Length: 141
Image 1 (cartoon, helix red, strand yellow):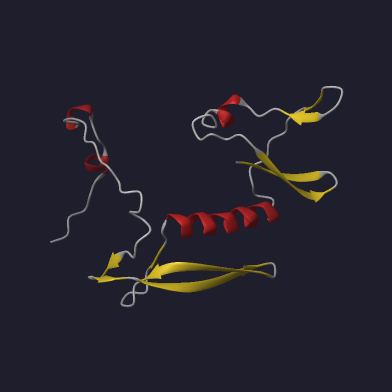
Image 2 (image 1 turned 30 degrees about the vertical axis):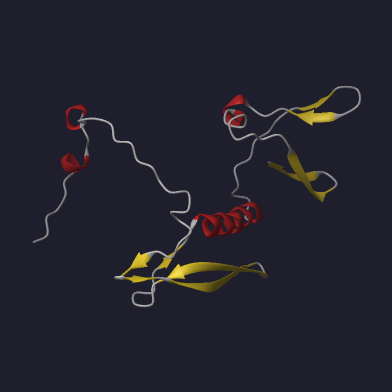
């Protein structure tokens, strides 16, 4: 018997919360074949292209229902392709910042909102990729 869920059922009220639960997720939890339809998925390769750029990536695919699953590394790899696609389409988020000069070097300051987690993630370097003489891609690593 199927039951429809109303908006009221979806809302969590303060009195619904009975305590905290600590969950530990194995660091390799998303690297393994995923189970689907009662069987382990198989690793397979997919291809996609954008403006003549071919992109290959691997997925975990269920032989029965053909559903695709991505582990953490696969998802990061595919996400980079989507970021490139957004960049080429002009849909990537943009920010205008002042260009500063200290007498020797030009530099750009990043807003505190964007850099709040950099210290925790030990971000110490910026990798610059020159796209043209006045266009650069900045990757903080």
